[in-house]
Amino acid sequence: MGSDTGSSAGGAGGGAVQMVAGGTLTIAATGFVDLGGGGGRLTAGGGSGGNLIIEAPTVVIDGGVAANGGAGGCPSAPGEDGHPTAGFAHGGCSSVSAQAFGGRGGTALLTPGPGNTGFTNGLATGGFGGGGAVGQLRLRSRDGTYAMGTTTVLSVAVDAGALTIE
Image (cartoon, rainbow, N blue to C red; front, top):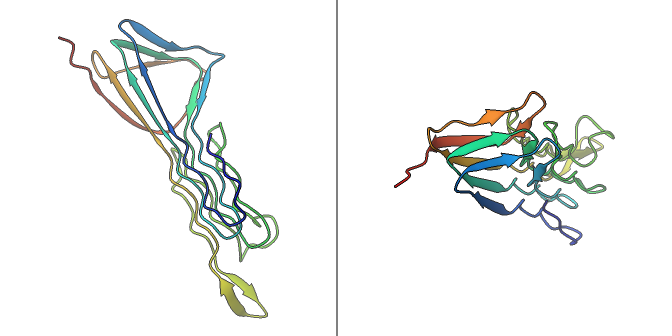
């Protein structure tokens, strides 16, 4: 998962992982690949989720894969890191004011949110950080398909295709 330490830095990206197997590649029910982006620090944008590349003749995902974007920050609070679930990361200050907060992080079902402008005494105080985009699962199997378990968590943009085996 992405992380950073600067006081006004944008959230770190979620990174990249490649998994390759000559037979069946299985992410077990107890396994989870977390490539969430880091939350933006004060007024900075959240990091994008990472990318997972899987190449195997047969792919089974019983556990989970999440590459959710981190949320944007506001002047007094950073955004949350991308969650290792299907839920989105909340922007900084999102529980303080409905008018001013950092944008939510993107998920497989939600686009990232823009950072809303803050207001003090009716005057704009500046833009807050937007949320990072969801990452991608690039999956190549013998026939372009994959199997999932009944409790699989999959919160990534999926690009599945056939793997050319020679």
